[in-house]
Image (cartoon, rainbow, N blue to C red; front, side):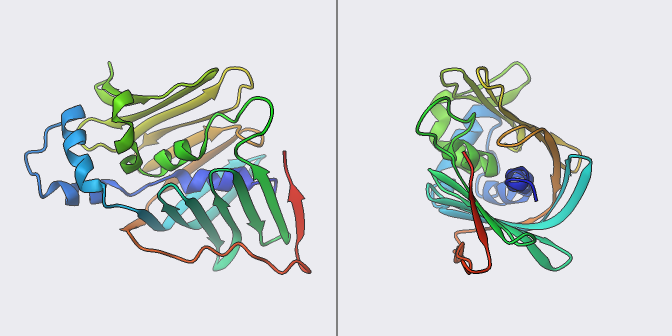
Length: 245
């Protein structure tokens, strides 16, 4: 399992089944307008969401002429941690976590624990930070970024929060508020994470942390404000540890 097995499949292609939940929240405001005005009105109702649990999401990874198919559980606690577990044929093949500083991954097949900094001490940073990744999991994390949002030429709500040398964009559908496209690109290192919604799911391309790979994800059930125990400990006598820079 190579390095971070494409960055945890980029969280199994990220918050895949939010549209149904958005519709349920909008039932309390049946006349909610489209565009920035509607999204702004929806955000106060989303302020009570502290955690998101996505269960039974399916992901297909194409990497180095190999194909991986997994069922994924993805958990995000606001401003705290992102956690993922991937299962193939009833066996957990990997477990991973991300906080503001570190990415950790347990490779069950090869009995290896990988660790790498998300926030570098020296040199150029990665094209994404923890808050960026959390925003990709759920559009609800974008409610505190309305100051950088506007409606673009493609009739979408666009969030643009560029940094020095890094282009950072996320676009939502102006009616459903479902994520349609995102782009994170570092002009100095050429590292990138890009994705777009297609019929049936989300397709993602990236060379982040490892070489080029492609992911397609779909399905899943979403629950809110549930808590789960994040366990990243292993028997040190059975696992080896690798620190990546």
